[in-house]
Amino acid sequence: MGKKATEREATRARTHGLSRRERLLRRADYEATYRARRSAADDRLVVCVRPNGLPFSRIGLSVSGKWGKSVRRNRFRRLCREAFRLHKAELPVGLDLVVIPRRGIDMTLEEVAKSLVVLARKAVAKKSEPKK
Image (cartoon, rainbow, N blue to C red; front, side):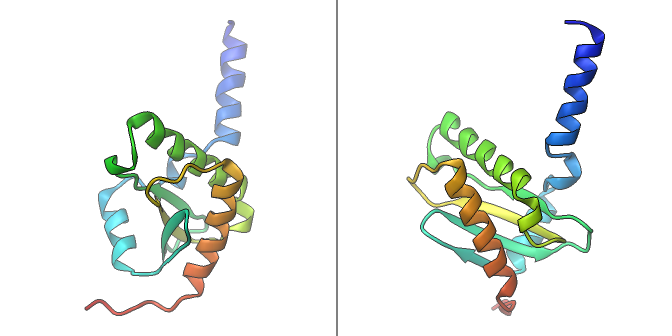
């Protein structure tokens, strides 16, 4: 494989993948999203949201070891990132999203995408609950 092919692959990854800025990377971002106490759930996912003050949304994934072995957990993470990437236009802008799978349910990309969009909108529509 030549240098041009490698550059093409890198360009494609940049234009079609998720950039670092579109992912939650710091523990503090996750904790702030949990503290905001705005979430929605269905039988597949729990989605926690908080406004981030940025012109784009970011996604974070929290998949417990109880959910399964690493192959299963990583497959779920790939599905969520792909659903987020493909459906960015349908998601509210300026949010930090933390996605948590329900235990023991395998999902397809379409199921994850549908749940992600619906739950993100539902969580945004909820009022923030005061911390007790």
